[in-house]
Structures are given as structure tokens and as C-alpha cells.
Amino acid sequence: MIMKHLIRIIFIGLIFFTSSPLLYAQTNFKQVGSMHSFSVSTPYRLEYSYEYVWNSGMSLIGRIGAGSEAYSPQKYNYEWSNGFRLTIEPRYYLNNHDFFAAKISGAILIPNTPFRTSLVPVYGIKREFTKHWFCEFTIGGGVGYYSGDYGRFFFEPHLQFRLGFKI
Image 1 (cartoon, rainbow, N blue to C red):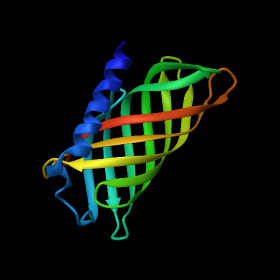
Image 2 (cartoon, rainbow, N blue to C red; image 1 turned 135 degrees about the vertical axis):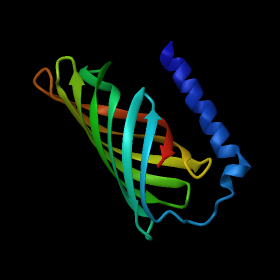
Image 3 (cartoon, one colour; image 1 turned 180 degrees about the vertical axis):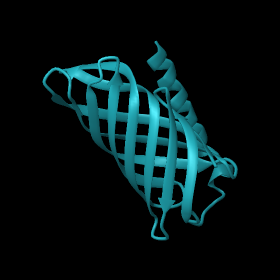
Image 4 (cartoon, rainbow, N blue to C red; image 1 turned 135 degrees about the horizontal axis):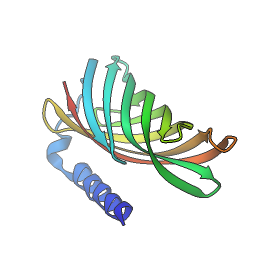
């Protein structure tokens, strides 16, 4: 029930952000330097991020956060748990809004502390509302590894909406 509402909110947000002409007003690529930010993302995660962007359109993002994590302890069975996550994300901006990235992350799940790691290529759209507020929508899929129950690899679907505040 909650996932249906969450997917509906993400879909409506995606339509709004991609169709608003005011958000497309920035046409030149101008992101150069570093940026600290705090963000809330689906599914229920709070993160701190640091992004360094070069003139070439490449950037590197480091994130640390806590919240819910999806994992697959058994074949064709996904479960939710809380945990802490560390993510490294090399990113290539196509323009000021769109990007391709490879999310490399590791998480410690609580309460029984198995380790989960993943490599997920994604496509994303980033929009800035003001000097400080931004949002991102990313979609992709990759491979994950869950260390519990003698370890297993699984398909890692990725659909995420992030609302953030740049410092």
C-alpha cells in the first residue's frame, strides 16, 4: 500500500519536473567546484553528500546516510531493513540537468548486521529550484550482494527521488 503511494508520488513529481518550462531556463553548464548537501531520498533515507565537479562535466559524489534498505535474502524475495550506507558515485553530466552515474554502495543492515553491497548504473535528472534547494530523480538497475545466509547475488532495481539542500 505504501509502495503504491510512493511510486505514484515519484511519477507525479517526475512529470512535474520534466514538464515545467521555468526549470529548463538554465541552459549552460555551470557546475564547477564543490558542494555539500543534506538530502532526504526514497525509500526513507537521510544523507549527507559531498560533490566535486570538474569543467569536463565529470563529478565524484560521496554520500553517507541512514535509513531503509531493500535487499534479497532469498531468490525472488525482497525485504526491507534499516541500516547505514556509504556510497561513491562517479557521475557524467550530459548537460546542466541530465546525467549518467555508477552508484557503488555498501550498507550494514540492522538488527542482525549482514552486509549488503551493490553496483548500479543509473540515469538521472537533476533540477535546482533556488540557490540552495534541488531535487533528483534516478532510475537504473544493477547487481547486489547480500552477505547473510551464506551470501547471494541479486538483481538490484533502482528508482529514487531525492530532495536536497545545498550548503
